[in-house]
Length: 202
Picture (tube, rainbow, N blue to C red):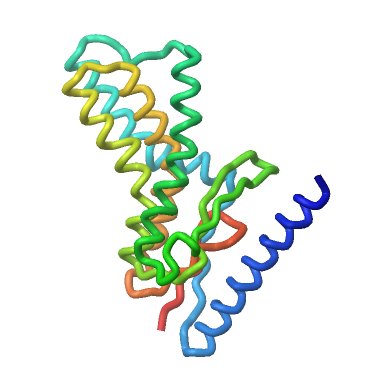
């Protein structure tokens, strides 16, 4: 067990070391560092402010069309689907960012912030603005927006409920993307330990 822990700590330290090397090299090339990170607590608060209105709009639209509330029963299938979507959420970040990386999926790391039991995806390579926000918003689109639209036409309350939860889960992503809009011409490096990024501007 201790061997696994030591290996994880070693990999984490290597990721931080790689991050610091890229950051220093970028600064040496004449770029200014701009930090855009939020805490896990802030992520949960901002999720209500950013993703909450989107979820409310879809909920109202569903009720108006089908005259009933989305599915609310905490069945085993519902719980399993939701936990599966959490894994898929991080995978969508990773697979999208990997398309913009020189080393592909090798530059993507998945882990868990154990203190808050928060899974996360980390991209080791620098990305431009378009690539960073595309990967950042992909889970919202695939797991939240598109299924919500589909459920409006299908009347599938279970799908709508899962979609609404995934929209809320993407609230932190939306917040980070909104922060990134301040640096459209920047080079982005995903932060290895915190929720957010470092943007480098000339």
